[in-house]
Amino acid sequence: MAKALLGYVGGSDPRLLAEMRRLQQRVQDLESELVRIQSENDALNAAVAQHPGESLLEGMDIDVPRAEPALT
Image 1: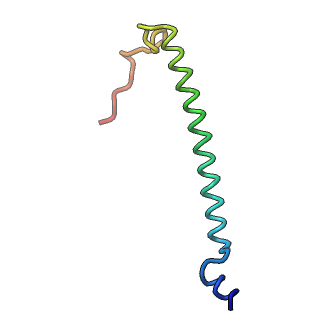
Image 2 (image 1 turned 90 degrees about the vertical axis):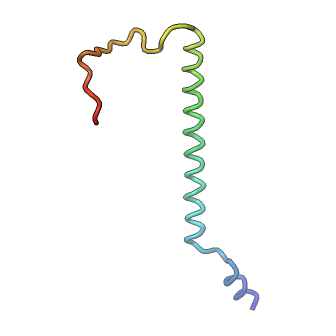
Image 3 (image 1 turned 180 degrees about the horizontal axis):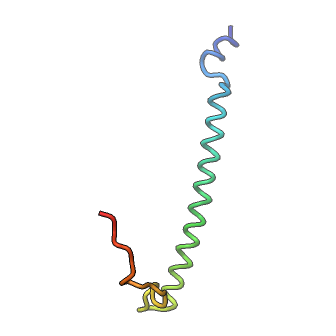
């Protein structure tokens, strides 16, 4: 009887376990992405701090007259 109740109440459903593993992996992937983006942001902030008053776009070869128009 106890085995029947345990199975009914919430024994190990393979689908539930697989979904839980998938979600845990997704959380780990997102945490890794967050760390990568934070370090990239820190590097950009350091670059800006080294050259105050300068634009990050300065020195880039952007030809404004030949730029394509925005879609409307």
